[in-house]
Length: 235
Image (cartoon, rainbow, N blue to C red):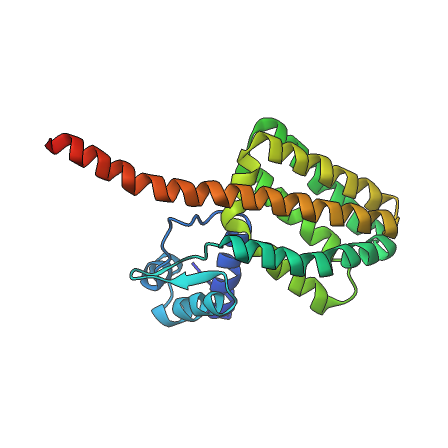
């Protein structure tokens, strides 16, 4: 339950945003303002305003019952990665140059959790630790507008990120790529960080496109399979 003196819209918004970042809300979930309000002990309007804010920022879409995580098309994924490649490598390079020892410690702690969750097969924890790694190096980006934009574009991919972690080959590629970026960050080498982040972006795009293609194919197969079973059952 939220405290009376909290900004209720902001509190609900940031709570939902964190859950979206950590893939705790799936594409099959429906977010209903009255249910959120009842859970948090507040009126309906702050919950609705927070949900509409997430819609305006591109994280959620409206449905016949509540709001749902926005699902990306293949074109969305390619377009978003094109923007990310323009921003993230240069931002990461500046972070490597300006990174403090405190940020280094946060980055390394997140990397330790990433490796541990990967080894244990805990995909939810892996997703959460991935967000912590991202947030750590973004703290060293002096241009806060750029850091906020990068964070926002990264979060659009939550609907497919768990799918890439669930694929052993993609997950191993992710771990190797992030480990190399982490090493370059600790070496405070902007050029190497920029190069490795660029390669990481290309590999991530291909992995996400592959996962999304499989999701779309599965969505097409399921209805036809049901129709096939119905025909056989009535023959």
